[in-house]
Length: 347
Ligand SMILES: [Zn+2]
Image (cartoon, rainbow, N blue to C red):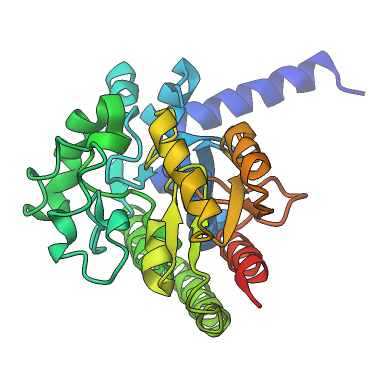
């Protein structure tokens, strides 16, 4: 049907369009944006809707801690108008990536303005992470605590990257998994909406409208989760997960998570940590053992086998699930985790 002539004409037209129309002058052209990982990507998608063209670097079930940026990822980032990152040292590979292809767009650090949990606080059980620093270090996180806590996270995470590149779980100043607090998720949403509105002011109203709907849904889910978690027995609130991805959720609901791998999946669990966990389970101080979607779960299965502990289900910490699984959006992930924990811990 296509004559050579019409084919040529349409090719010419396409080329001309690409070359001569910059994004800004084409009001309906979605702006190219990048989010570093799936949880953040879902939030950006909720707010940006059809006015953005989103690339998520670490997709569903991917592990951001051990991600290796590809040259193609670097190119996509270099061409983006906005780059959304979590910050707090979560994306330890980011500097390498933007070195490969310089990024000239707008950088939005989603955790800007949250109250970060300093590394080591999870071991302090009780409330009060402010004072908690001095204790709980025995288990061998000698370095890294004293520096960097005071300066506030604004500057904190820029520098955090350097220190954190090698073992950000062990040496980073803060726990990066801040999205597990509903309150923080609202701050993420605020930062995302502001970032999009700044780069694309024409559609600011659209972004803020989506933002409001999303924030309302987060608040409604938090209200549900508050009720469910408050009903859990007070003596059944210690659980084991492979890596320490749930510190903010633990703080919110007075839970305690023990994790043989620590804050990052990059480190291997030590034999001593595993032995300690097995002891705790045998002393019945741990109520349930969970697996995670992003980790190698053989260790958990081994611990369960040795102790007779039941695996309470699968939790999603650092990545959403694929569409056919129960945690493919931020809200579904939070709903699933709340339900899975409460079913395993409830009477
Ligand atoms: Zn993690």
